[in-house]
Image (cartoon, rainbow over all chains, first blue to last red; front, side, top):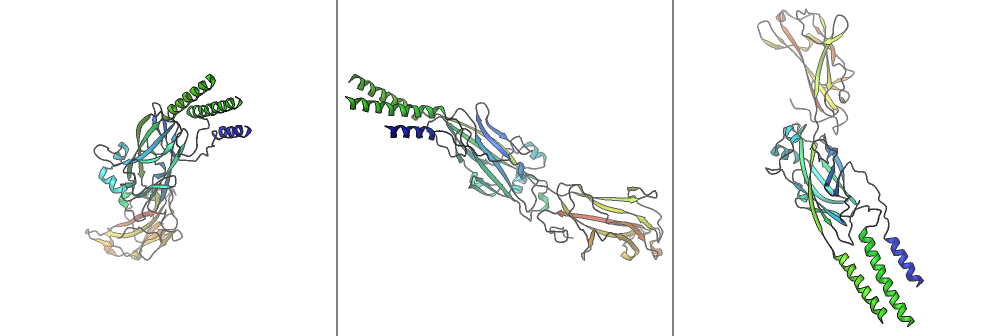
Length: 229
Length: 190
């Protein structure tokens, strides 16, 4: 009896808190749910949703890195799945205004981006390596993870500029479009591959735990009642 | 018996409720596009030519007329880095003349004396003067020279001639490019 109670107490403690270790990121994309869906906290100056602020003014021989935090803060779902893919520029996806004002066309921009090697990692996993113009690893949706509220992951983007980059590539700009897609799931017992969890227990978690104890309690009552008889 | 049956019903109801809560599932899908931009820097330098007038003030250099052999004039070329990135710079000086009959000739170096600042500009065998330090953003270099002297032995063929002392400047990035202007690579080929 005493042993059974002790186990129940330990179980309720285990449903509690995991502390979050914040990780610095220079830019952020956050799924907030509600009317906002995705909100970008850009670090760049070219567009309103430019996450590559650390990749400006690169020079031949440079290796530059940008860290982008991807976080879920939505209340409405038990967890969300977030995907990433790159989309090319064409008639249906023209380049942004400021990039065009810099004198770029899709053809010139593609040529420029093909000179740069770009590596994209999700945490420690490499998801794309190659010319920044192609990003073959991101041609289709790549699952970044399943995230409960306040859980996150970090994308690391590294760009390597060749030493022998020609003078004609001075003061150039190349646009890399990324589509973030979310699936919000309302399902109890949610998985979480993100880092960091919310500090409060979800409603679904309380309900599930309570029902489990209710069943155990009823079972124990029947057992004791039957034994007395 | 009644209590046992009630308990059984309660347990089954609780389990059904639990399974219903566990099994309920709804999906919501949305997407948004980030427009990320990678940009390169570049180099931009300008040649600034000034002179010291008779009052000792620094003024922009202006062409001078009616110079005589043996005369020394003030001409001060410097380089300013207009870009955001440090640059190595080098300069070359050419002397040429247009004679009275319109013939263009190079002027031998011994006929035009230039007072080079060899402490800050190193003369290399390729004919260029390499500035000793990387020029930072908005920085103005030390003078390449500050006076030009027309040699006293200048011959009569140069009477009424127009002399041109031309300074040309080139720059390469300092980042990821050696430790000095002389060891840097990427200089344009002539």
